[in-house]
Amino acid sequence: MSTKELIVDLSKVDFDNVLADIEYIRRVNPQRHEMEQLTAVVFEDLENMCCVGYKDISDDEFWVRGHMPGMPLMPGVVMVEAAAQLCCFFAQHQNLLGVEMIGFGGLEEVRFRDAVLPGQRLILISKLEKLRPKRMIISRFQGVVGDSMVVEGIIKGIAIPVNRLSKAEEQG
Image 1 (cartoon, rainbow, N blue to C red):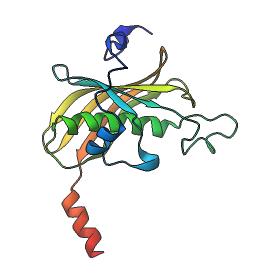
Image 2: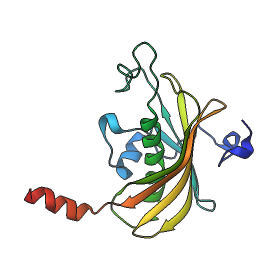
Image 3: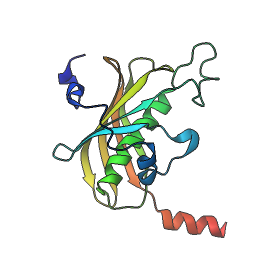
C-alpha cells in the first residue's frame, strides 16, 4: 500500500506515544462495555484536521463466538463503528461541533477490502472534510491492518438532541 493512498503517513506516527488511552477516551466518548471500539488515540493534527487511533482486537470480543464460528471475522459494521468512534472522539475532543453528543448521520462510499481477525491491531485514520457547527461533521476514514487497507469511506456525524431525548424517556 502506498503512503500516498493514506490520509496520514503512518510511518510518521509514534504508536508508543498514546495521547488518549481508554480512560481518557471514556471522558469524551459515551460508549461503554462491548460497544467500546477504540483502544487508544495516538495522533491529532489540528492543521490538517486528522486523527489516528487503534483498536487491538482480542479473542474476547463480543462478536468472536458467532461471527463466524471457527473463523472469527470482525464484522464490517463493527469496523465502521470503530471509525465512527474515532471521528467523534476527534470532533468532541476539539469541540468542533459544539454539541453534547454526536451520532451516526450516514455513510457513503464504504468499501471493505480485507478481513480483521483477533490478535490484530486495526489502525483507524480520520480526516474532517466538512463541518456545519451544531449540525453535522463529515469525515473521511480508513482502517489499516499491517500494510493492508481493510476499510474506507465517508461518515457523517449529527448532533444528538440529548436534552429532548432525556425528557422523552422520562415521560415515556
